[in-house]
Figure 1 (cartoon, rainbow, N blue to C red):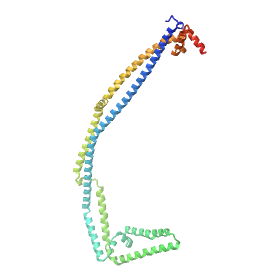
Figure 2 (tube, rainbow, N blue to C red):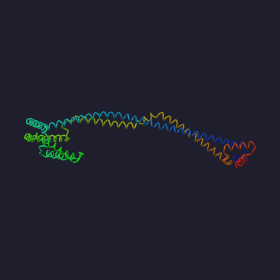
Figure 3 (tube, one colour):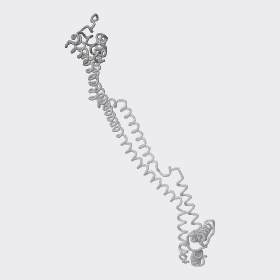
Figure 4 (cartoon, rainbow, N blue to C red):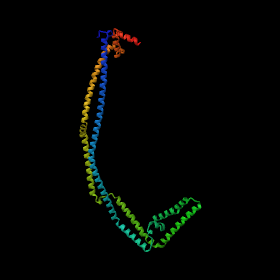
Length: 364
């Protein structure tokens, strides 16, 4: 073939060229088809792999949650018991504090009860109104001492200055009506104060003065009771309230909670170290088999593609050296070859070269 110039050949040589080109086109078609099949296999493998991964993750998370849930329920139960014991302890402590306050203030409360009874009896015998036995009354009508004087001064500021100023600004009339309103207010206030004064202090001054020391003792005792109460509530020493049994129960429950937590940690470590792999293996068994089968098919497609590419490469090299080098790339198509065959068959050309010359002239 190397010694023979194909340009001097005829239909037989053109049929050989056409056969080689047809074979090349067929190989290209096969390559494209198998490459597409390989691509579809790869996509299916990728989809199955993702599904297998999601399935295994969901199953592992579900089993892990189930495992942890059992321990969490036990911890929750113990926490409920712990909360109940702490509430009982708190109630016992509160009751103990109340009992201690009651015991340590018993004498003062009894004395105040006696003083209150004596004042009430004295007021009853002298027909003194009950509201007179108040710090407010003594502050307004018989001020003595810092507290009562403070009440008296605040009353003057509030009712003698604050209220009149407010009335003056609230009344939306001329100054004359403002003046009448304020005047009427002072008149009512003055009469009211005078009537109460006349009916109480002026009439019962001796009784009120005689009972002032008792009232002061009552208030002093009350302050002492409050002081003792605050001191007891601030006392952090709880040994005297017999709370040991509660503390023991609380300690035992806390130990159980800690033990459950440690067991949960061990179980989860064991789960992550050994169980997860078994779960994944069991959950993906069928899919892994399917994926392995698809991978085998993909490898077969790859091998087939490689064989076709080698075959096409060899064919392309032979076509280029034996045909394209003589005919030129422009005439290396099946259509051009068919035209040359028809020209030789019809007698228009005797050789391939003559046919090419005619076609070249026609195209010009």
